[in-house]
Image 1 (tube, rainbow, N blue to C red):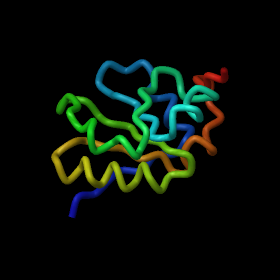
Image 2: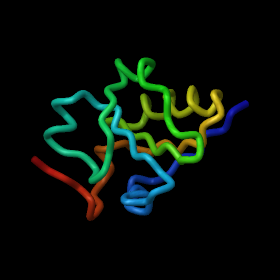
Image 3: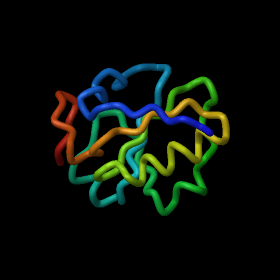
Length: 102
């Protein structure tokens, strides 16, 4: 069993700008351009398997639109030894101060 820690959308602000974390937005590129969390890296879920080479010392904080895809991706990465967090409710639940709207 590889547990994945879940965090609330509000907790995303805790990880923004931290050198020990990478925030990963799994939504498609168009959704990312329309709005995202400041500092997030966009890796669409469909392309995620091609981009699994992350620094091992960093916590990977994943979010998608509503939380399902980020949970699956976080579990996959946890099985490979990464420290992961999945955002409950995804981007739709985020109302924090680090919201970037285009």
